[in-house]
Length: 46
Image (cartoon, rainbow, N blue to C red; front, side, top):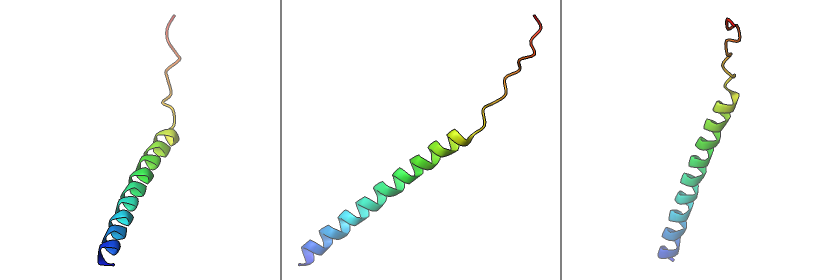
């Protein structure tokens, strides 16, 4: 019984770490998308 409990705890910890990594990646993507596009100077002398 003790061995089974230890295995379950390890699995839960791994799942939590994976979820945290996934959330961080998702937040970074949102920040990049939310960043407004830089205005390009269109007034160029012809």
